[in-house]
Image 1 (cartoon, helix red, strand yellow):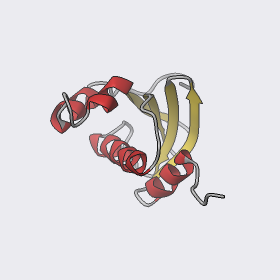
Image 2: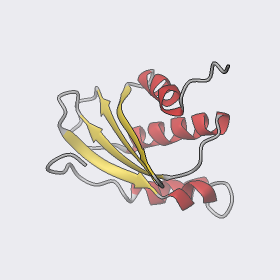
Image 3: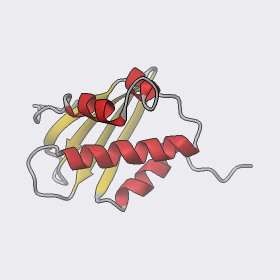
Image 4: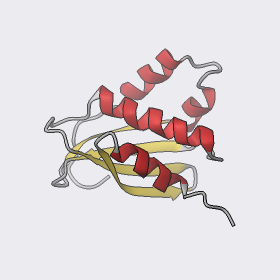
Length: 121
């Protein structure tokens, strides 16, 4: 019997300490849809929060057996309003520290940040 928590629970617990609250985690084949809330008052996704989520996910993935998947992330306020979305392609995760430097990886991820959308993503 193992005491290891599911990946998303470990991620959720670590993000809470950073003021980011994981509200949804759905794996569908090669894609993970992640929805989180932030307590900040800013109306849009920030590079800091994207970095916190990605770094935390990578730290948990490094400790666990997690297969890289495309990550679709949506940021919401605590009232449920969309603040925007962003994503990371599976091959970017796989290429990190190989053919992709941390700078190039970050540039690609931050280039995907989009504005709030109408409706749930």
